[in-house]
Picture 1 (tube, rainbow, N blue to C red):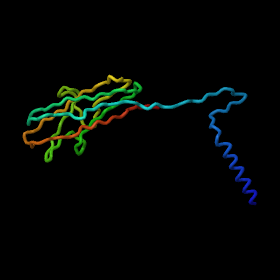
Picture 2: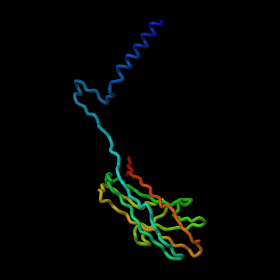
Picture 3: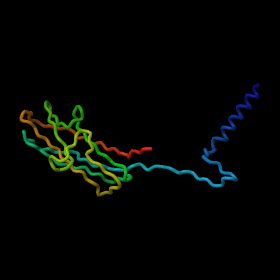
Picture 4: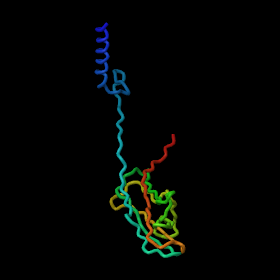
Length: 177
């Protein structure tokens, strides 16, 4: 009985050992089918660099007057298929990601526009601020923007600060079967 168990165990081990190195074949070639092919596949990771400003300086803001600060972002070294988009979304750092500037005891909301011109296309929180596609070299492709703050008469004096957050994501086209 022990010898029989040993022989069965050794046989199974030998079968596993000899079949472990064999590749999985999709098609057998024999005298009737002498040619075949194998698909070779791989991928190359997407590449991009988006430069954002470290700071957008509003300067000294006046109550009941628009204060504006232009800025821009630049995409460089983008290598994407032409039907794939690099999307840059924006949000603020308020409780619900709203665009706000805070001081120690007060806050002011601000507006964001999709060009250096005031009252152009206004961008809401989480909206797409810029979209890039295809191949963009070292010279880059730039999207201008504008921050506009209008402090009300009741706003406290002080230093106000906040963050404009940028999020980049690659958007692949939807394939319908």
